[in-house]
Image 1 (spheres, rainbow, N blue to C red):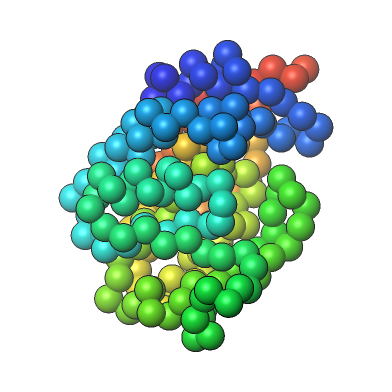
Image 2: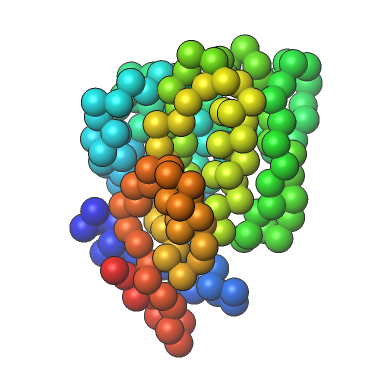
Length: 189
């Protein structure tokens, strides 16, 4: 996606540990028009699949997932990282570790919203080590549902996440792939 590539090259910042900051347009101060186009493009790539739900992790993937769900005309679910009074007691759970936050979480999705006849598209903003996506795969598996694939705005090819998922036979569609980071500069494929 040319527009997303350009924004990354012009605006993204690199931090220690290969952290790419795209918070100025993608996941904190959000460019809604860009996010809508990202969601439409990811939906286009999975057009023709019998997707019944879109699933993401709280919180950075929610905006993109909403636009994907809107384009596909299906509900969007997000896996909650924290137990609150606003979620059913009957939940599927999976453990995950956040690369960027260096913290582990228990993800939760209500059993009312993820069912065995669902075909689920997993969405996230950035794919690095793939821990969040692996946990989402586990949640869908526990529900008896099927995963149609994974849609990602930005994949870090220098990390293992995408490679692991593809070796597992999971379809991964990334709009932009970061090949490497050299001297603080992002190199795209």
